[in-house]
Image (tube, rainbow, N blue to C red):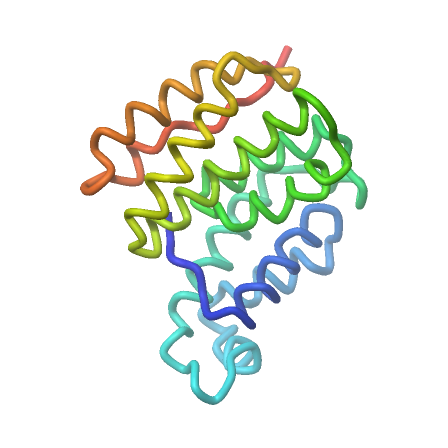
Length: 190
């Protein structure tokens, strides 16, 4: 888990990361931001009052670039199954805010059990992002509510083990290590 950036660069980087799921040019730009040679590009991304965010921007871009290198280019409008697969990759890279951004359009179009399960996944991702940003109270509330929403549900994958893992992490929340975060559910590869 890595902290998010100030609002402007956070949203711009999240948009670039989501675009990079389906666009090779965006992946190249993300890689350039992540590289040591990308310092000038990083400075262009940050406002005059945000120079201390250079390392955080490069670290987040590096995590995203490395994670996305494992995925083939996707459709610009991914199916729910493809979005969940991409969300798992981003989540496992500690990019929880981007998971929220990726799944939110699917949640907005969904109904019933699917909407409830997606809301739980989004709440869990945002909960872990709150934890990375030092907001323990917000993290606890969202992780508790989110795990309750995914408990006993499925989205083409069994969400119950994930719900149990998130619940276990609540017991150690104050000193939770990134390696203790419950892994995002994934479809089995045949």
